[in-house]
Image (cartoon, rainbow, N blue to C red):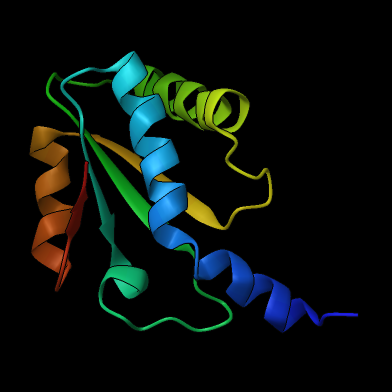
Length: 114
């Protein structure tokens, strides 16, 4: 039987595959969206407690409720249409261009997906 640590790392090694599934789902809903992997995975600082931070940048202004709704729709679509495992350790950040600037400012590296 595999340990939880092995199981977790098996998910983290699939970060690009998971990010591509999220990117496809995001672009289905927002065709002009840009998708990036940021944080520890992008910076090659992965630990067993890491998650896969995925930044979805939408080209229009988003309000709070709309941001939360898009977050849910992208996640559900990524799982239902593209097979993202329900237990994939992804952390989605849905932002408009203005609010995405703070993520880019605090990130040492961002990997564009797609």
